[in-house]
Length: 190
Image 1 (tube, one colour):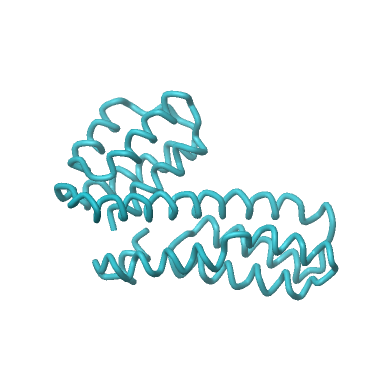
Image 2 (cartoon, rainbow, N blue to C red):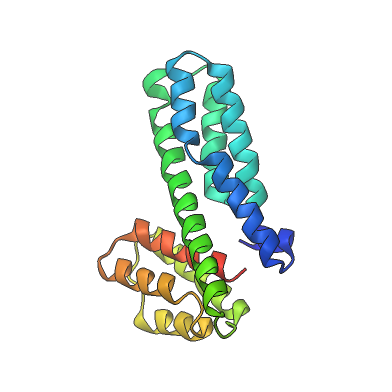
């Protein structure tokens, strides 16, 4: 998320434009890659994986960029069929996570603009807590209530819907959706 924050330099309109463009350009990308592979258009699939890798890296979506890079390497090595399946599944999962977070962010910012906005969050503290929580969620660790309370306090009412979703997911031990909610919170901090 730091990469995206550097790019937009606090400009919410630029952030929204970048995220809308990313969503528009890459919604359905996993399906398109698989369709190209099924039609034996491997060079087209390679090009799409390469473009997705770069777009994701430019936005700071590290895991998605890595998943696209892994697929790109396999395609360059002329892997085919079942040898590509794990990389395609990883790409599909990471892309869905990012696109879900982008959609949640865009919906939230549209609602905030319509409703007048919220009180400013302590962005630095919230980002640090998000980083810590992200590591814990990736490791499927139990999250102390105090850590969630600290994040909620740092957010100061911002990203309330995403925070509520994070708490719900963690209460159900749904680490995949918890990570999506955390990404949505991080996007809202930009």
